[in-house]
Image 1 (cartoon, rainbow, N blue to C red):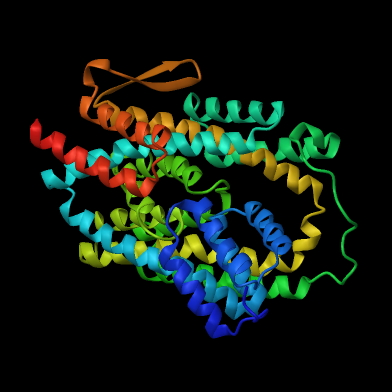
Image 2 (spheres, rainbow, N blue to C red):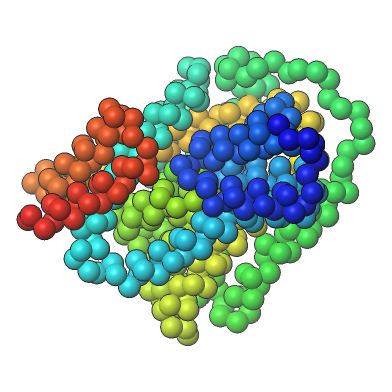
Length: 436
């Protein structure tokens, strides 16, 4: 452990840049990497502080690993430290996804490119199932939580309920249960008494005003220059809303995007959404960066008055801005309240129930992707208020099914990492396409 208990700003920047370039493997791997660097090796953050902040970041909408990086920077060097650590966690992945999105936009119609992504889409199915089982095992530790997850799955898969409605309903149930009987949600009893220091209203108000103005600035420019009917305005408003309501990480975001970006806006197909997740899985930074891929394609395909490339880059940049700007706002506004939030039992109950509902959300996402990746044709069935897709068995893509089984075997049987499975699946897709 280093003899420097409090690093200089330059030291923080160097370590944060290294972490930003090495943060592969999703939030679990990223959180473990930061723990090893900041707690175990450098000793800049105490173990209890780190775990306390991690619990706090799990309560917030958006990517918990990026918010944890921002909190670490804020803890060590205030606002400038939070900005540096948070931005350096995002920028390497954002630049990589942008470059891959540009390549995808130009090459998506090439046969060899489609063959590679056949394997990636199949592997994504196994990856989503792995995430579903991991989150369910960690989250569904009471009968009420399992019931909430099941209701969320049925509501989305059979009744197409809006994602925000599912989140709001779960939150209300959780808050009520926490007030009446916290054991229903397996909540731990409150610990020591809340702090007696003055409430930090001034810091919070300044963060909200400044952060809110910066968050809204590019949207004001789009509205004034292009109007509310332009695709960039649609992108900005959609992903701004997404940043507020999506608890549960990138897979929950994907479920909502699938409902809106694919089915309602028609910006891209279900298979392309799976392609985007495959790209995000293989690059550093938060998995929620897949939103940038969606923003790029949406603007690329409706570019006026720009060229497709320029429109795509603007769309990607706007998406990244409205997705991550609120993450900084949450940290700078709420981090001074961290100790007090640990004693907000109703809030903890609401967010515990929302996390349970996210398991059902991811389950509906897994089903939706499986149908669209494995089958070429689906039949819409309506039974009263319920409506769902049934696959035509004769339209099964045997190549996708074979590759999905291979990926599942490597992930669950051989315990391979995502970074090893994805290239194997991509090469498998290319090989099968050449053979057929």
